[in-house]
Length: 283
Image 1 (spheres, one colour):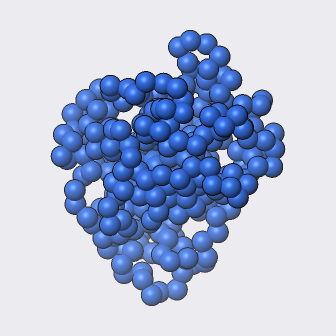
Image 2 (tube, rainbow, N blue to C red; image 1 turned 60 degrees about the vertical axis):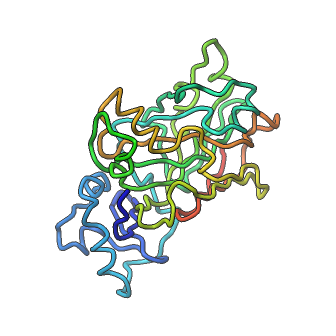
């Protein structure tokens, strides 16, 4: 795993911006046109972002970082993978056996929203799932575990919002449909490069509902770590720049508590080294 110069990339009103401290820098403007305004283009050429970010340190920002201005940092991925039962305690609370291989489903790109977007509540069994999301930065197929992190552009926060009624209405469960309503995939606030972390395999992840901590874990507790997930998925299909991997949620989801999201509930999702999302639920 290489450790490049750190950078943080966000999507501010549809434009790619670098985030330094609490300020934003329009990528197209500050790169003298080397980069365009599209966040997806920035990911395709992310190798140069660290040097540009370093050159901007100490210079005046274009403005403050405002969470409400941010959209999903990766707005148009080709593929979104989800991974179920990837923490032992979550598998236990779900009363399911530990999988022998990654339990993979897909979320449709229409589910993506920003770090301050409202979360739609469908029915009475809408649930939260705080997750670390991997952003692919280099195309690859049949990637070795040892090389997997070299294909990662960075990491972001995600909520794999789930309609448990739809997900579990039939057997086998309909994971993809139950997790793909519009707005069921808040992500952000930034894509943080691997240089932002002392150890990207061991990050604190927390979810709060109305100020109460409902999930608190470390990503080192994954059954199938990030590198193994990348190797597994790339053995089946080519991973493209901008593809997202929701890596699974720890224990503490609402279904295990008999508590679900309702109108006005506030979800805070925090991952060490990445930042915080604040999403209000709307029925």
